[in-house]
Amino acid sequence: MHPALSIILFTTLSGAGFGLCFWVGLLGSGLHAYQVALTGFASIGLASAGLLCSVFHLRRPSRAWRAFSQWRSSWLSREALIAPASLAMLAAFVAATALEHSAAATLGWIAAPVALLAVFATSMIYTQLKAVAAWHTMRTPLLFLAYAISSGFYFMLAMLGLAKLTMPQHGGGPVVPDGLLVFLATTLAPAAFLVQYLWWRRRDAVGFGKSSAESATGLGNPGSVRMLEPPHTGANYLTSEMGYVVARRHAAKLRWISAIVGAAVPAILCLWAGISIAGQPALSWLAAIAHLLGAGIARWLFFAEARHTVMLYYQ
Amino acid sequence: MTSLPDKTDSKLGLVIDLDICVGCQACVVNCKAWNTGGYGSALSDSQPYGDNPEGAWLNRVHGYEVDSGSGAATIVHFPKSCLHCDDAPCVTVCPTGASIKRSEDGIVLVDESKCMGCGLCAWACPYGAREMDPSAGVMKKCTLCVDRIYNENLPAVDREPACVRTCPTNARHFGDLSDPDSSVSKLVAERDGQDLMPEQSTRPVNKYLMPRERQGIDQLAEPDFSLAELADPTPSGVLAWIDRALDRL
Ligand code: SF4
Ligand code: SF4
Ligand code: SF4
Image (cartoon, rainbow over all chains, first blue to last red; front, top):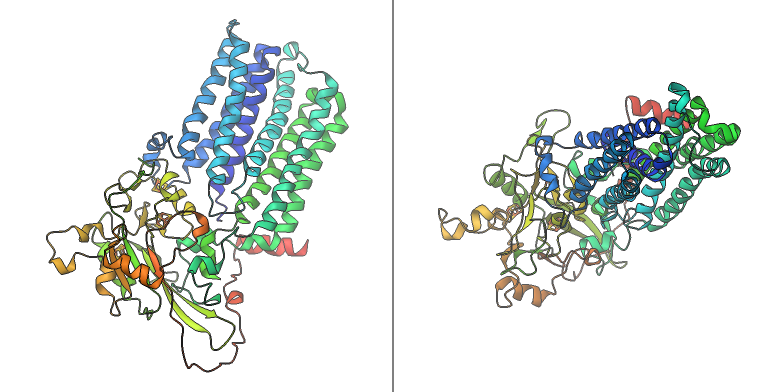
């Protein structure tokens, strides 16, 4: 499948943004209002930037508002509804925390799972496509959720570091025990790539699923089918959207690059910083960006390596 | 509404006879000609006279070699357009309500005034029956010539799809596949009409009639080149640089 930059940015940035929403909602009630505001705005900004990127994928963006209408059948429509709802809930949580409202904690606990629901809806846009066998598995939502949770966590550390830097007097320690924080910081990135590894293993085995050139043409009974002449002499929409091949040549190397940058680098950085990780803005930002970059490369492969049944007509 | 109707009053569709099609491309051309001036925006091309001519077409004819393992291989011309599936995945994924399956005749259509050009429906169709219009930026697909088949301004003989009307060998047939007494249903029963990719559970309305067994063709030599190698493009520009850099790694 064609790895469009708009879609890669959309899925990785909004994933990280909603992941951060999740952590802010979950842990925010134990943080200082200043920290909540900073992490909360970062999560909303990151997710909105991602959502904005998706609009660049549309050929008729002025009609994007119509995407709110078909939630009964369409996951893309559901995503379009859940995503802004999730951001609104987080904004309410940030506001309630700032106003020291008694409902703040409850709002946070509602906002956290809704943020994950938004990521799930995004992943279902791809999971639902039976024509792309590599995506059509419940491992895909698992993969998207794993990346969202991990990249959200590193951005939370990074933003807490920033909070400490800008207003040291409010830099109250993170709400989880130091040991757990270091544990999460060193394991979440490798864990996300473990899910990615399992996803890749299935992808490499699944091919076109149950479909073949024979079933696609119905000519399997007479014998084996080979393309003799394509229906068009150049590229067309189908071959450029569904028949992306340049990527696959380097797929194995890119997988290693993504795992080293996205899993090994953040884990080593966090291990090195130890319990002081939340107080080290430079290191935690480096970890967050490395992880996001690795996840971005892996997401590029998610698209570039996926094969669509329409290519069976061109074999 | 992108939910599918529980049941359609009729199932209008095509029956395509692979035994008869000679691959003349007349249906391809007439489909383009009719649909560029009919329903919705013009069916456009980009750079039609330039280096990379490309365009949206609703019907394309592939050519295959079928090797049964004994005797000479058979050449099969394979016309492909939207199959107007009963369980059309392209319709349910559409977020805007532009893609619909009509409950009266089962035709799958795109309302171009609602389409935002996201392309998700083209990804959902296993058959590659949908193409984005390069200039209008809306999704194009076979309309089953909905603007011909009910069109009282046309003489009765022309009230069938353009591709069916033009086919010089009668390889394409049009009719109601829900009516067991229709000529198309009888043809399907007689020749054991097939669904394409039944494992995708789309339940296509269109059916394909398979080539009949050939007789008296001699054994031929094997070809000594691979089309697949010719089809593997080399990148250029920035991609070429990345390609080389990764090669050196
Ligand atoms: S052939 Fe493709 S575009 Fe046509 S109804 Fe079936 S899934 Fe949709
Ligand atoms: S391209 Fe148009 S018709 Fe297709 S899913 Fe998107 S909005 Fe619907
Ligand atoms: S029915 Fe009409 S739109 Fe569909 S392939 Fe035939 S000519 Fe084209």
